[in-house]
Length: 160
Image (cartoon, rainbow, N blue to C red; front, side, top):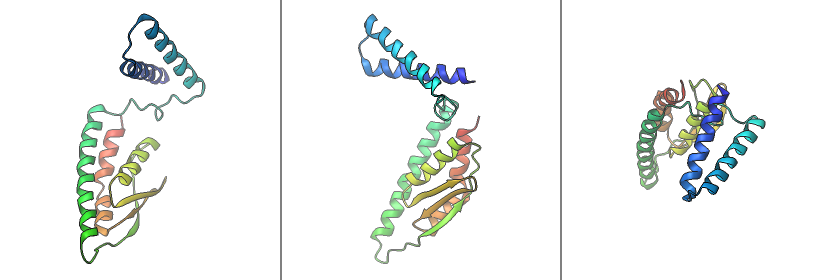
């Protein structure tokens, strides 16, 4: 399994190097290939080539679907926060809630916590084995998180 991560990391680095370089002479391509091999070797020696450091196991189509869904949620949350700020009575009801997370690994939990923080009106405060502690600007935002739609989508994307 580790060999798959090394190969994937090497191919990713080589592709990135080729795209950013724009120079394809034999000397430069061979130097780029040598630097990629050196980086993969050093990363392997440092024991940082693993499932979380280079998560090629995430389902590519699910990632794009999740990004589209998250973008929609960010826009809706922005509109909600703007409405609350511009409303004359400022209808906010801040609360701190603990949200359960069903992700089996730390990478999934980090993706979930970061998605919560990216969504306006909510901030992840703490992530541990019991779940994620979240500060929400309104009770409605906290209830939306408790429904578990974001949790379900992140779990679906991050599991094999």
